[in-house]
Image 1 (cartoon, rainbow, N blue to C red):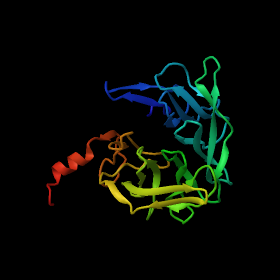
Image 2: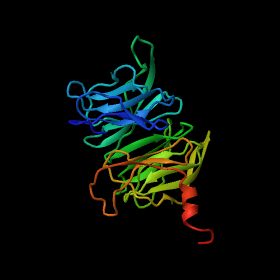
Image 3: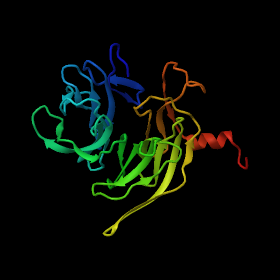
Image 4: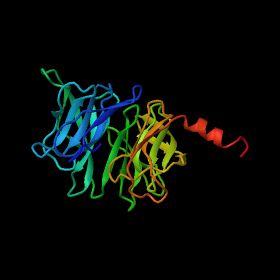
Length: 276
């Protein structure tokens, strides 16, 4: 959220309907990711004095702590379910974005967040662009978007051991998200619609196997394009989205507002009578 000369991280209490500003660093602060326990938030900052990844307590107590060294275009995207790895995208193979994972280490020091980030380890680096790495609910798969086909598409690979890779989207895809129940994978089309894909995944001594179903539209509501930064997130129950919705069908740059799509399927049934 913009705060004048830059951008900062805010949280909103949905019960009280009150927003609270968390970060007060100069520059642009963005790409916020919750730790699995919900106690902290990791984000990217262009702080001129010390750019990199920072962490801050979600309740607003304490100050933001720097977690990584100066690295340009380094963005966090997803924690593994056990909280032991953070998947990030950063410049790796030449000028392209690649996928790294950082070990999350215990840090009992006074005034610390209780954790620190270790050195990033390359997970996937090619001459193509690989972005938006998202851990599956069991931590054994990583979804991401790549330009290897010439169009950005969503793929899945096993984690952490090497293995095959399976294409999930068709006709372009961005911003993969897994439902918490382990049954669906969501992604956004290039024209900003959210799709859902059911899947089956198996792990055996002989190898891994992932089979994705046909993508289907999760909601007809078109989201607002935000470039390389995610514009939606899935609630833990898998029934709601928090999203930046397009202001009109032409996608004009009107003031952005945050919309929560609640009880989507109930509303759809109300508007479309049975048998239609």
